[in-house]
Image (cartoon, rainbow, N blue to C red):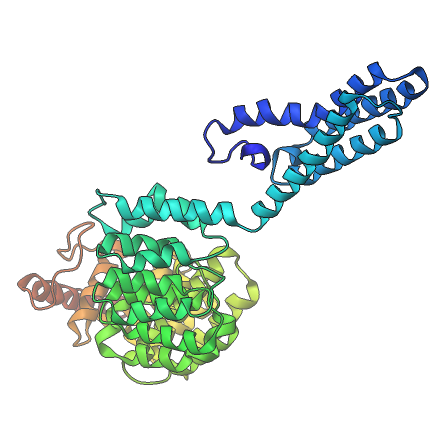
Amino acid sequence: MALFHSPGSAWPFGPLLTVVVRVPLLLMPAVLLAAAAGRAPDGFSVILWSGAIFQGIVALAALASRRTWGPLAGPIVITLYLCGLSWLWFGDPANDWLNHFAKAVLVVVPLVAFAYQSLLESGAFVLRRANNLAQRVAKRKEWPTDLAAVRNLPEVKALRAALVYDAAPALVLLRHPREQVRLAALAALEYRKEWGPGQAELILQLAQTAEQPALRAAAVAALGNVDDRELIEMVAAFLHDTNREVRRAAVESLLWDCEKRWSWIRFAVRRVLSDPLLVTDGPFLPDGEVLAYEAVKDLTGWCAEKGTLSARASQTLAAHYNRVLSERVDPKVVKTLRDTLADPRMPAIYRLELAKLLQTHRELDADLLAKLVDPANPGSLRLIACETILADQADKPILRSLASSALKDLARLSNRELALATADVVQRRLGVDLGLGLGQPLPALHSRQATDITRRVMRWANQFDESAELEQSGR
């Protein structure tokens, strides 16, 4: 059975059996022709010796080729033996038992090789191995305590590789009473491309009826490669699942092909982004992916809406552009983001996300910062501009003066959250001790420490004004 499998196959002693069997198998026609040439008359021995030499050269060349050691060895064997039969047929005048035996070998071996190659290409061996692996998974007694680790088990990985032709061996496991076995079967089917009639619907039915979140998440991931719009829309319903891991699996499963599927799922996405109960899910974006143009266009429009939809749409766009800039800083993209950030007509929450993004990538230039510290902008946006100026543009007196004046204004606003954030910037960038711990998070808004820090930063702002007035009067 190892004749046409690669040396790295799963057969026992595969490499050794390959060498022991294949080398004699490929050299056999040359040996038979040489034996027949030794018993033939002089006139015909030349033909047979020529055939033996030719067959030997071809066999050695075949052994030196890597293709000979793979699944394509069957056609090579058939060609070698049929060529040897032709040489023996035309160079055999004698009625000798050896010649008849050689002809029989040169006929039977290619027939067997052809039958085996046909059986190999039918997938019977792969399907048999998949069934054996499925039985091993079903009989496994010890399972990881973390169900997410089930997909990394060697048996599950091997089963996933064996499900090339048919998913049936794994589908049988979905009726197993143990949750871990069903989860392993779904993990082996993860992002499968080819499904038989009714198989994808079976997985969807399991996802809709399973009580365990891990099974629903694994079933959704298994359907990540389906192309049927109706199935995709049904999978999109899991974006609103009660379990966060299932929702995340649905996002990963649906949006990896965002350009094709966005028009199918956009209304489901809008509904999810609008739900205040799901606001903590963060950006609606798969790991390592970026959004299609239509998705970016829709999300930009949703940023102008109210409530949760605006917040999550802004977070998603910021995450999208963060990945775009992390891969390659495109000057056109940076210019577009700067223009959007500078436009006061854009939604404030979207501008705030863009300001954080451009601050992280150090793409806030001096002209834009001078516009952002203007009192017409939201306080959080002005605070980001002030910190960026004091961190990156401190050598420019005009910008530094604008930032200090803006911090004074922000410190005097009746917004404790903004006051604490302002105190943090003042202490870190201006070196004024306001009672914040170094490297510590900001105190709770309604704590006594927060009240004390708010008073200190307001006192600093008033002292700032008094010193400025004294300086002007002294002049």
